[in-house]
Length: 142
Image (tube, rainbow, N blue to C red; front, side, top):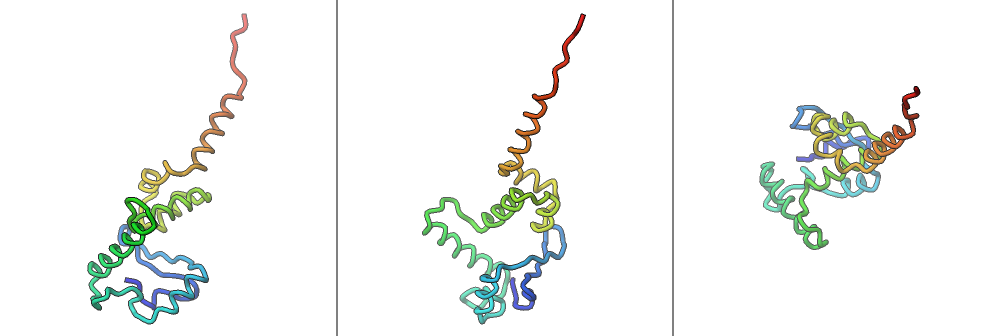
């Protein structure tokens, strides 16, 4: 549950339950402005006023699925944002360790599930293989 006290100085302070670590991330200025305009605390309650995390997350998950459906995105789900962030960070040159910290995973999990989608990684591997082709070939001289 995102409460108002988790947002300060242009950052959001979260707790990654998977690795039991605190994570702090910057927020874009336009998102900060939108969050400041929300008057409820927690920021995203369920319409029934429940503060049970399961009820709130179920409600907002359903809302996001409706948005995906309306946008014509097949199989859309909230986890898609997490995947997009991981792949974007990796494509921008972030290490698997940094991405793992943000996601609350281990570097091995990030490499396993997200590296396959990183075009820059594949491009780098292709260049390394092509460099290997350029090495002089050994020939037998009699």
